[in-house]
Image (cartoon, rainbow, N blue to C red):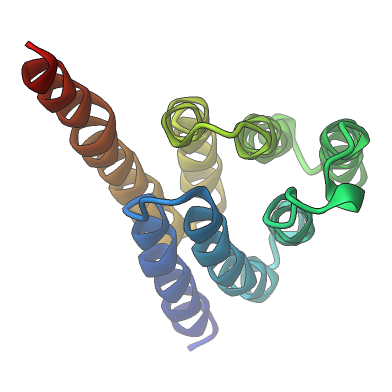
Length: 176
């Protein structure tokens, strides 16, 4: 029953995670990611995987800062450095085995992507984080996490094609 509850919570996060990359605007991408992070924090706690929980907590805090990057206090590049360092520290503090570094690498990539202003760059820089989470989830037995990363990678590819490739082709056609 314990594992079933963890997976159900994780699948709620999975749905939100996938939905996030179908958003057109940066603020909406990050907003939906906040809700997904809450679900995944609970998911990893129930699974007893504290590296995943800690890094999702950091992602939640990071998202709150980055979604407000139009405000003076959140514009400082110090935040980027702070969240990269905190991700590394959390990985060390919750270290279990070599795979504990994978969620930290994923969080660092995502942190960098959220700092960017371009939705295209957000999607492209975020993409490599999914394989890191995928391997971690396979090792720790997070079925919801495995499915999430497979779907997120697919969702990112769809969004890249939809917003970044086809839209640019349409603009080029209209210019000619």
